[in-house]
Length: 195
Image 1 (cartoon, one colour):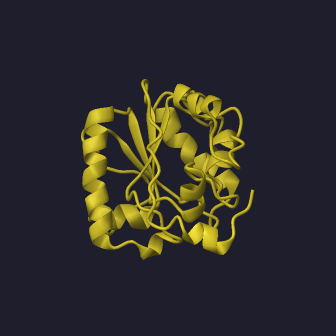
Image 2 (cartoon, helix red, strand yellow):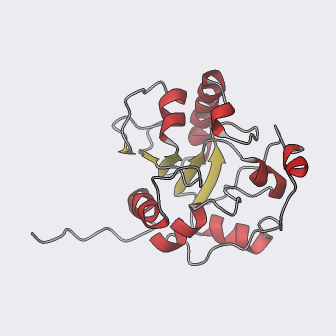
């Protein structure tokens, strides 16, 4: 399913619902919905986005959703039933995350704090290091597990799965996303390697 540029532009500033449910173990936090995501009502829906392929390659999900027209109820239940939730720092859709202001990211960080208090995931994984640094005022935060938890919950900052992130591959994203999934109990602990 394709969209014209004008059709996509008509979804600017639209919002999508959070994908969360009971038994939430791992909450993935995107920066904000892209226009394709807003058009389909589905997180990480752009065909060039590597989020769902990385989750499948990591073993976090068993199959990639076929969400050309949006997630169907069975796909939503499969994701939520796996203990996964998806939200965004900023709710409004833009063509690029660079269109967001620091004030929006900071307000989104406060909203995320409230949601983490309410939803109580075991682990939070924020996909987008620049948004994390700006939103949480951590200009030197590294990728990976953060020293400071979020409302008592361990936090990982992970590479963005956007096709605009040329440094990441599905394989490197799968490796990075597996770490918080192991911490959340969604994947078995990694065996220490023998040296």
